[in-house]
Picture 1: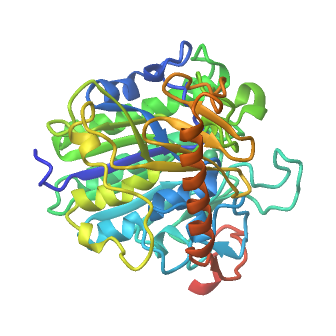
Picture 2: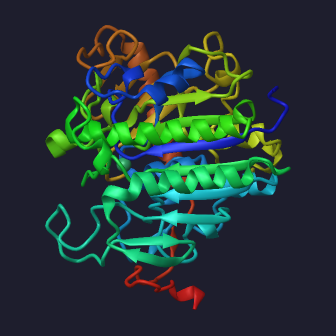
Length: 438
Ligand code: MG
């Protein structure tokens, strides 16, 4: 296999999984032999960044752009929201479709729950999952009683309401395994986006995994997700396509620490979900592609979920299709796949946001991170926990980052695209379809 051969792409995207919640990232209590195996057979990234919360993270992943560019940085979408990912945004799935890939989205979407915002409106041939967060249901964990029953959707139709959440991880995995089996021997490659609902609170796990982990219920949930990864790897092997398939495993944002034991663990990182500290944005990330990605490597370069769009498009041979009429913040990080230990990141910096969409901090590829409001500077390479403010030691670094922060802030304000805004009710009942389809 060489990088010229277009790979299948399997992207496993977990929800609110912390930087410290995998064996290969140092969890002492959660056993993840299958994800650890991916790391042993591929590359593990230490400085991989996403976004502080669910919707912005998925907007960035799908468009290769900061969520603030596409109007989705402030908070998350709720059932029946008029807002969603604008129709004219070009997603990873659309680019891969143009390259002839078969595409599917499974699990959580969270970029709009009616047409024209659904996965099948945005380049995916098929969709199966709960289109938003699993706590957005009647009597949810926030104590609101304003949401309709949780819908499990196929394409754009509700096939079940209030599905037994203990079955979700397995059902999503089943769906992905079947998709791979169906497409493995076809002439065109495939893109499978498996966005697990778990471990977002409320946590649920199937019986065989109950109480199996030293890491409590949260650990059980991760171990079931890991078991699912093992089944996917087995299917790739059974079909003889493991060398033709790039597998990427990552998470949308940091752990939801205020959920106590049900929230994950950020390991050495400061704080968690919804914050601009590393614990909010930095996520575990692993990539395996036998024969292309060197085995058992660690990449300490700056990379982000936004970079997956230009990277996947390049691997699929459609780099020329990456939109040039708008700003794409992602950069092609193929060389961090093929040569992860000696290549420098092509990315110069990365902006960190609050859960309200406000730009809060910026870091550069060297590992310096600056918070203008607090006037604090951290050296992440010496101090990944953001404990020691070195503003006074390194004023020139702080000034340079402050300037870049101002540029990015202004650019995001003036050079942004409108959010999708189309009224439409949420999915409400079994068999109900969305209004634009009926
Ligand atoms: Mg999340």
